[in-house]
Length: 532
Image (cartoon, rainbow, N blue to C red):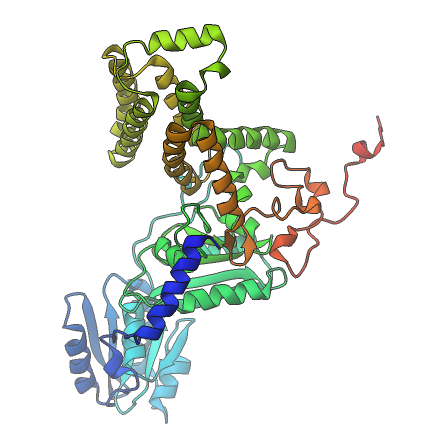
């Protein structure tokens, strides 16, 4: 944990001592332990009063063996065919054809008449209304304080498509959607194991967002799973509209700009992380699932690294790591050398650089600041504009502004080259949140380099290493397995060895089952069996 994280915890402890936590009551809190009256007409009026009689509330009253009954549902949240064929038709038509009236209509309603797989009882008004607002159909029967909840969820959903932000050349083309049940099915289809656990939660006093904790019980460390449960269960917020809400509550150091939680849109990537002993957190309403713990080397790993041959993956990984350092340190290195250490540049190159800077009225730091801010603004504009226009504006804008700035004598051509290389390098980082963190920290190092030269650049680098070494993600060191160094876990860090050599899972997650690949699976040709 970094200095700012410790400071936050100290302040949090003081706040706990000095004030008492106030819990905001829910609108349904008065009905938490209250049952229905057992009179359908009265209960229907109570439901309309609580919900404000909205336009999408549908209440169908009917008679079941001569007993008044009602079906309560929200239009647009249910599958109409399931409601008609599985609920209303059996209750309204087949009940009339039946010869004998059952002794217990409520028991008959639950066990015999409803042709839907999932039926459960609700004993309180709060439980009943929360289920109806989640897409279930509620059934009221005269003379019964308990009600039935029938699963008939069905609302407009986006179909499973290719992930927009994690495109691969080789690999599955399926991505998570905004529907939680579709996402759990995509994981279940890839892991047909009885040890796959999916624990449901509801977070958000108003939104009541469904959240699922998914992990493999025979692999994941129970302490990590319990810590995930603890951090999620303590969240008390009005609504959770995206998994980013959860991320800010569960990360170890909230003041650290580097990401401590991974997020992905790819089911295959989430499953691969679970097979290493990690925990996946899915939230309804978003295609981005969270993966914890997360270490920094993982943010340089792309999904297709494990689908291509290992030497191709290693070459691309090395390019990504070099791009990360270029994106973070190249402008600062240029500023430090031009401002303080001109003797480090070869004479001919130095003459050319000074010739290009001869008409520039600003120092190198101001040049870099102007170009970097302009580049970041263009990048943001390209993201926010409509897709057909965004790419053209960002590319053409960069070319025009760069050329115009050079011709106007505001910046030098060498600075344009440095900023362009920095921008291209930042695009090569697979994880968007890590790339943004590098872009933010780059400005800090630029200030240090402009003030102290190479000494300031080294100060920024050393502070970065210290900060990363002090960072943890759910108890796992952020730089593991590089710091602390574990030689046995270096098979999949900067370079990846062939699958038949990655026998053990990463030990820094302390998985319950370390064996991943059976020993002795090296191909026959590699062993020397050269059969013709």
